[in-house]
Length: 422
Image (cartoon, rainbow, N blue to C red; front, side, top):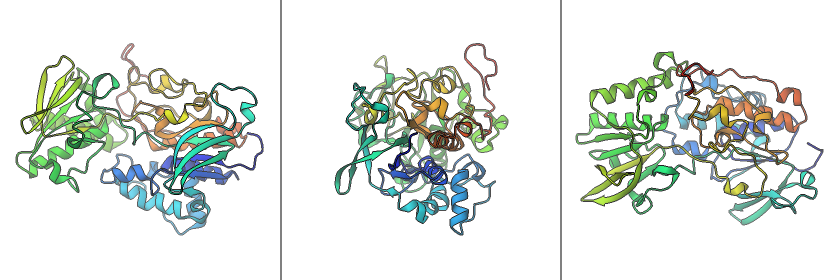
């Protein structure tokens, strides 16, 4: 990166965005953090009731830790303890954001709607690599434009969930019946208990978020008579749903699969495999879910859609990106994380080289860097941020160095021959 008085724009003030800012400060570069939400960690606060399956030893970014320990009386939580999402925010992200060196550089309720180059749309060559970035931002005071020497997009995918329908599009009736459809991870045993108690609920999705919601509904059913749980997945064979069990190096992650396997086989959960949803329509007092043949498969009161998220690439339309055709990650990263060919929850550490786009000095890090692929872990994002910032600072040796070892899932194979892939 050439010398410039302009800051490096960081989109998003979640764990990875703040880690990028901490690394920038440590390198003597100026961060400009733009967060759409009213508080840091806004997306995590939405699922703050959920217990992570990763202990604190994996949850604190090294550069952020050094900044906290040097400039405050902050003490790290016990490394072997596993927090809830709200604890991650309150015990780590909030203290980090309150630091004087950080707080002045974080702009809340600043939603980035477009990223481009000053004087250059996607088509224009000119002096593209020399032109600063332009970010169009909706703020409480109205629309503003910011310029930056580089951009690190850590905005995540939580606010752009995948739809319920097959083929990646909304099911017919999905929008009309939104009042009975909840995306993400509802607080079934807490503030949203009344919504699900004594009701028939189907959870759509096969990832950890779906499994956690299924288990919460099972627990609610043990306490509230009449609470019925169905679980709809698109895959025909359920074996991968159970995870690695005791072989998973993250015991909490392995336990999710073990517990939901027991709930299915005990009859507490009705598992519907091979279900691709085409429509949802009103039926009697509830909703009727139809498969892609038009056949009605079940009648429910509530639907929880936990099918993951997708990156907001519309805001990046004027940049020159090189995206993997399947995952919408960078082309170099795609083959490492595509769940069609690679079942591992643990992807080898990677950094600036794999995350680079044709648009010079633009990087996507964190969950959004995975595009539509699942199984992202916070330590992966921290390593991405460290490497990317090193590259922006001109330290290419550090950018290419691997400084992370991830826990294995215990379920690691390719679809080609069923052999090991990690």
